[in-house]
Image (cartoon, rainbow, N blue to C red; front, side, top):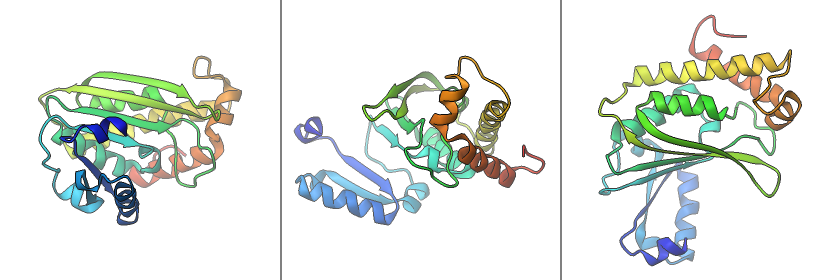
Length: 213
């Protein structure tokens, strides 16, 4: 926030549902930054990528664990289709749900990284990190997108494939320890496995006939 306040040429664009962007607008006014904060509804965002100049820092925080497979593909394909040479993509998301969230499922970082790579990004750093409260999240930094843009159909196939790999990891945890993934006890506790496994199973069932579960 201090760096943003000091850089008069920086512009912040908030993308979300209407009820959320009004909260951003209120905060911007409180901080006297509203002249450099623009708001865009999620539906309008998908109709047309914002034209703000270059470079752009694209930041998604605590978004992807709340998206089903179709909307995950929609967001990733939209970002990759409009990503420019000097842009940077930063994604932060939780590895543990502080409270149970019905229908939502966290990502296993390795599978999420492979999914991002399948969307054309070549330079990726993905780092799991703890918080002071004992929760865990991961930060993914992606740059250097290849010239060939992924189609929406290919994006959806990659998201399904990544989530199926994750489903198999979680399914194995029901029966035996998975060494090198955290250890069974810690991972089950961290992921609230039963609830998230059920959510992921339902998402896969909705997308493809004969899917796991």
